[in-house]
Image (cartoon, rainbow, N blue to C red; front, side, top):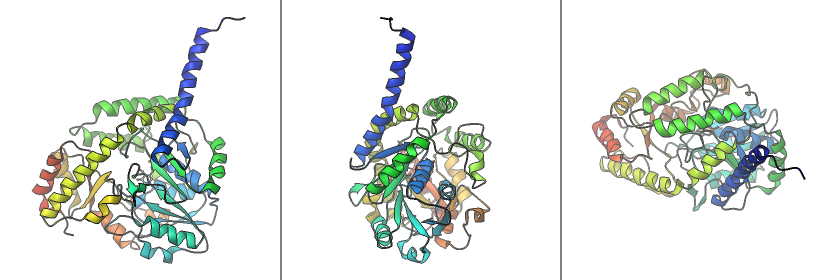
Length: 401
Ligand SMILES: Cc1ncc(COP(=O)(O)O)c(C=O)c1O
């Protein structure tokens, strides 16, 4: 018998170990989501959305309804599936789709309604699902911000036909880039499974770059370096000089990037398995900081995060409306508070020309007002006093309730 080749056996062992990472990660995620529905892994959250739309049979001429306060990659995935996005204005207190404005947007062509967990808050999901079921329309929960949180005591992502999640840099837990879908409607499972064979594998170049970025982030991101690194990362991504969350063209156009339907890599799965072990600690810290900010703002008569929303909120970010955004941002930068600018546009981060995405400025007054004034306070900070001090020094800029 031929003696085993040690180099080949070594490679095989590494390959086997890598191949077990993906199913182990999917199982762990499914477990956290109640264990009743399967989880499918993708290169990014937006790709998971695209796969779900395809599995739901979305095709040319169909309409997909979504909140008018989202990330542009969401309508992009709808376009890539061949459908048209139809926006609905949001509620000012939840930043989520306003169910009272939903029915007017539905037509005989509506195939799917997307409800969105924004900043960690699940709101009105039951109402949306009820309206959709009555009309035979599929529902997807955009839980890009919501993993680990609950709605009515059940894990986010378990109420709709399906949900998708993001594990990109600043999400509830991070795998650098990454996403997954949970499929609750049994009839859809074989359709999502059928798409598995279309999934591209991430290239060696992509995975090794991502590994480097994950390491660099671990060492470099500190309060003092945050603002400079965010600016650098966005600039490099825009010109395709780095593996960004959005590649240049994705933010300029509605054409599908090459090799879009891509799976997750072992590098991301390993990172995810590690990060999940610390998620509960992080969730507790976010909630504690959100309580601190709310107590302070309430005391000053400036609170706009209603207490009754807390049970359905996991506080990935703490949104705050300010009257003079540039001044507040400059103050945060000076105070070394890592303030977020998520949804500085109703189709974040697109500043102009929203009509290309069929978004007609002026039609969504609530979403447009929120986007003009919103900043996001960090909830993962170990130094909430620094944030409270910033708020205290700039109370006049904080918009009243
Ligand atoms: C609300 C929302 N949905 C979807 C996505 C897309 O997630 P990903 O970047 O993983 O594709 C994002 C992105 O950050 C988002 O904010």
